[in-house]
Length: 405
Image 1: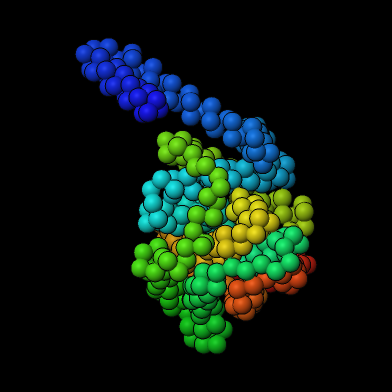
Image 2: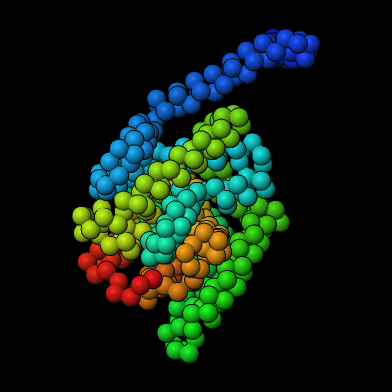
């Protein structure tokens, strides 16, 4: 009762202040707004203070100032931009989930579809505008393979080291694996047709890629409708995996989304501009950078959540994050990048991938479908997935692709 009275009294006071501002005394409402903004900023700073990962935010101004003062220092700028993107991805993840918690399943699902992989999307858009299609396609393949093999494998390993045998909802795994297989088929077809039928020209590949991109986006929308609306009871155990963390207020979450999105765009521009020279310095190809570095950096926040859930024996959350993020990249982000390339890219992009990338996507999808079919896992299952991922990463590092993506 006491709390209700306080809230009622505060509400009346706020209304009175608003009325006074309308009578020519705007000072009161300004004080209220300033107090609210100050309170939100204090909460955000408290979050940063208690999270060691967010301490890396100090590198954000450093890399922006460094890019302005020493734009030719590509290698240091590359390292600094990687360190800056990791905490920004963590902030984006928390803010997105906080908004989703306030807006409900349907809107939250749409928000996660558009912002769940925002870091990878912004980096890819920046590379797309610069015409670095090898980096873009490598980042698409890398995100799919990293989520299905590295993130899922590490979750199985970390959870299995603490718990003898773990179980998870097979319906969720089968649903996401099915969507991923559909996307893999669409990504593989243009490359397969071009290799078998030499009469298929560039125009045919581009037209086929556009049609496939539209189909993938439609399939992703129908998949969201199926899992969030018509049959959501089948996936209840995988929803809201981070329920243990209190969501931010909606105002703070939206302000964080807006601010961090701008910072990610600025840092991503520095990353893309410096990646070519830095790759030469470190002996890496753009394909390896996109396949490994961009995928690991962009998914750092999601990986932290998945690993933590596995250690707490909440493997439904880990599987949902790993496979959900992979299908999101394949069914939503990749088609959007292809369609947007017609407006911001030097030339339109297509779904023709280097043959090695096609093989990697196929193997990753088939392996994931096979491993998650039982609904049970142990630490050695994680080791097997990680070994497959390391085979791919080592191959790209030592033997760069000879045919452009």
